[in-house]
Length: 263
Image (tube, rainbow, N blue to C red):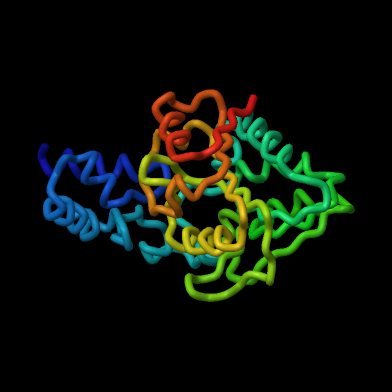
């Protein structure tokens, strides 16, 4: 494969989320790490990408010296774009996840377009909910019996999510029986996200939960690039839709994860 073709494929691979990992490039291009590094160096010199820890990202306005940022941003699909993707499946997953909640308990709900779909079904349960998502806060505010906690940190406006840097303690003293979490992708390597800042925040949530409930629509099993949040063996329940590939379902169940197919 010629260098121009490899560069085109690198850029194409970054379009869905704005990021691609070195591991994904090695698999996709069937090229040596040294060749891939040279390709990325050329693309960076051309101003098309920026190399970051674990891979590379497309150049944004901040990277290119354009407009002034309204705040920090995360790699990955902006919330307003992803909220409309696979919405029917996400709504079914949200209903199934909410059905696992017990009246009066405390839960943690990580920010995301799939976890957001739980909110209409939590009304009346008298839950205490710790969430880092202002979208989820807004959805829960009209529920008089739902108590809401939020961590401290910086606001990432594209996702409307509050995150603190790795190593900085920002969470209230809160321990919950259940953590509901989404992901950018799921594969044999585990649960993945596009941004290392998000990974650090989710690890803090995982450490405070007795049970990890992963909520992902079936499209997340086709994209396997990103930074690993946790192995499949750390997931207790995975809720998805009927489009999950058969091979992925076998991998999930082989890891000892309870698989719930929402309808």
